[in-house]
Amino acid sequence: MDDVANLLRAWIMIFALILFIVSMFAYYRTRHKRLLFVSCAFAIFFIKGIILSLGLIDPGIDALYTSGLGDLLDLVILVLLAATILKK
Image (tube, rainbow, N blue to C red; front, side):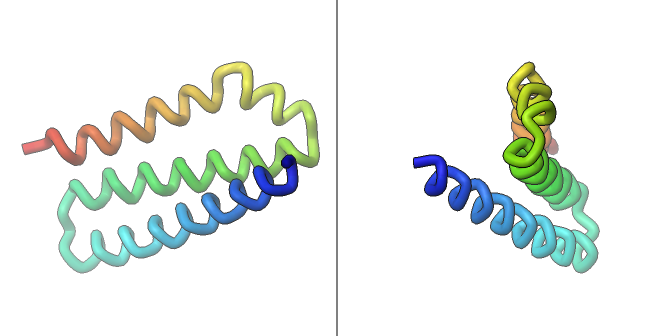
């Protein structure tokens, strides 16, 4: 089961990177601040994936992530996405 979870984490990280790149191209084309917030959210999501991947190699990183860093990153991602939707 761990192999399946690790494979899913890798694909999620790759997909977050692709969405970050696409949203940055869209931002550079339109210069809408909303797209910048979305780009930042996808970038943080990608960074979260990197931290999870590094946690497979070093248990200390995994312990740091599970101590609350993961929840903090999730909160920042949600705030950025909410700001995108709620911003006038």
